[in-house]
Length: 121
Ligand code: HEC
Image 1 (cartoon, rainbow, N blue to C red):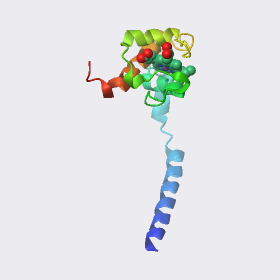
Image 2 (cartoon, protein in one colour; image 1 turned 90 degrees about the vertical axis):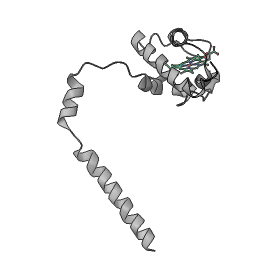
Image 3 (tube, helix red, strand yellow; image 1 turned 30 degrees about the vertical axis):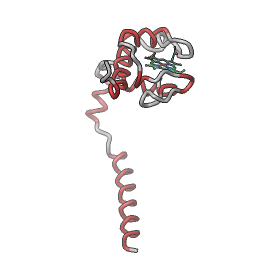
Image 4 (cartoon, rainbow, N blue to C red; image 1 turned 45 degrees about the vertical axis):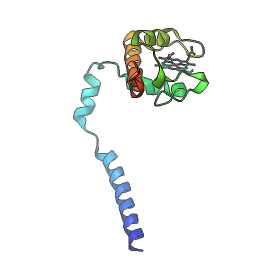
């Protein structure tokens, strides 16, 4: 019985804190900074999550629409840039959506996805 009560109180406290947190978390400094700063280097991970997980999945191994398993890909960064830029079979070309810098960033990010299984080379 006591356990349940404690859990309830804890849950309410967490919810309450969560709401309060989002309300008061308006840090004027960070907001000003994002508005004025020029965009930093392209974030490959962010781009990947935005454009690639629909087919490749969060970890690169989902294989939807016959997508290549990026965790097992043997391609070099340059070759990946080629595939991402110009597309291949069902994979769309991204050159109209992403600039060179972004394509390079996301290609590098896919290299990270491959790391788990790289010993054999
Ligand atoms: C519409 C689904 C789809 C989306 C979205 C997609 N891909 Fe693909 N991708 C594929 C398919 C299908 C292949 C395999 C092409 C083939 O068999 O020639 C592939 C192949 C690749 C390859 C080659 C891997 C290898 O070893 O041959 C890379 C690298 C790649 N995708 C990266 C990306 C990146 C990065 C993005 C996001 C910018 C992305 N893909 C978005 C479907 C997709």
